[in-house]
Image (cartoon, rainbow, N blue to C red; front, side):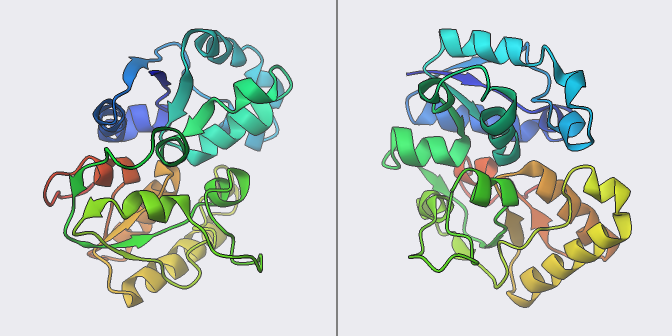
Amino acid sequence: MLVGLFVPCYIDQLYPKVGKDTLEVLEKVGCTVVFLQDPLCCGQPMANSGYEKMTRGYEKPFLKALQEVDYLVTPSASCSSHLTHHLLKPLVGKEELSRVRELTEFLHDVTGLEKLKASFPHKVGLHLSCHGLRGLNLGTPSELKVPHYSKIEEVLSTVDGLELVVPPKADECCGFGGSFAVSEAAVSVKMGSDKMKGMSMAGVEYVTATDMSCLMHLEGVFQAENSPMKIMHIAELLNSEEGGSGNQ
């Protein structure tokens, strides 16, 4: 299976290890991976701020990639959601859109979980990002009274030794929200602080999510409030072979 790996701009610039771990996880499950160098951004930051017209042309490298690979995979639920719900949706059919996948969604739905091998003997709290949960249907939002399911939890269950904690309000927004964190900084920080308190009460050592943007925001809150908790993207957990130190 030929997979095009799209590493979002903020991961490329600030958390490159997440991109590397994503690449290695995909290779471990048997994929041939092509790193997509042309796409620099999915266009979400501009669109969220009311400047969607500035993203004209951003779709071209993604359309080209879809002609050359079996799937386009990214370690970001928000970027995947923006690509499939906005940037590419007016231009391609459902079949092509279905080949754009967030990492855990791809592992769960396409490759299966049998080949995943990782070990991380720590207590990890799960933050369920808004785009992944409600945009990509990676799990059941708490506001819906339907049977529980979680693709993310199933994927993480393959990691030996990992004690996964899903605290109350795990699917409540962390406060990042892209440009919201800039325009409403005080509210954003309070939301992140509330999320931190819930994780702290659960006694977790690490907090993980499908979106490094959420984790980046929480990392800032943790550091500002001298919390010992650390962040770790799901790709890092899935590529861990022992303990790992997480992002500092």
